[in-house]
Image (cartoon, rainbow, N blue to C red; front, top):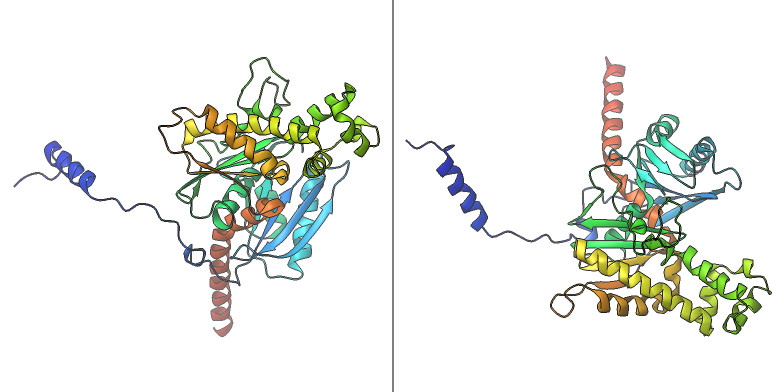
Length: 376
């Protein structure tokens, strides 16, 4: 009798499995994604910003049913203040809804257990055990997620990346954040801090970045880069910047991202040129990401993406021009995000939904146990 665990038998078994046809991953319909697609299992998503905490009650279909918001001006550097504010907004929503779990999207490094914020430059968090701190106070299950990962998940589940097998999301805000979703799973890396695309070095000895390095991608293709270039143009007293200066009432310091975006949409030549430059840097960086990840689609989100094709058209052009192997490989689509400012909130809430199911089951078991004890 042959030994099924012998080396030849194992090799034969491996060969047989390799020759079997493999069913490709197919993204399920929204109503088939999991058994959690129930209106009773609503969760709360929390989006932490530099000066505000926004929360929303989110259904299993990705709809924001209710909202709460608190400003934290001049106080948001304190971890305790932000923690108190998170608890405050969730409790406000809990007065009106039956909440089963909470997802928190935080800008910064989140550990692989999705429990602690390792580093958040805008909030002064260092190894902050945020999950346990909030869960203990709310008596609810909590998950902490990087805000860009939460946005990427939301766009894959409900937005512009729905149905994609390999998706990369690039968020252009103050800096650049990123998220990767492959076959329905967020790719966080070994230590949970993957997707920090904004800190890829694209210009050695370039502009100084807040991370401590020079020449990071976000110094050339973010909202900060857009505003910096516009203000420098205005301070140089360039005649092409007169339109921007008029909108800023003659003060270069009052030039902001939304002001530049509005001017570009109104046809201001300098603003259009600024977005073209940012778009070119965006396309170069995306071409580099394509070499590393080869996704089928790039979704561009964040506040800077509000410029639409003024940003994306030059980005696509630069992408095609700098893509390795161009002309001999399929090209990923580059599209604008669909969920806007709600992406992080919706994604965080949806990533907390598996906890909601376990929480509901545990609560039902506890209630049944109490009933039995009452009978006996």
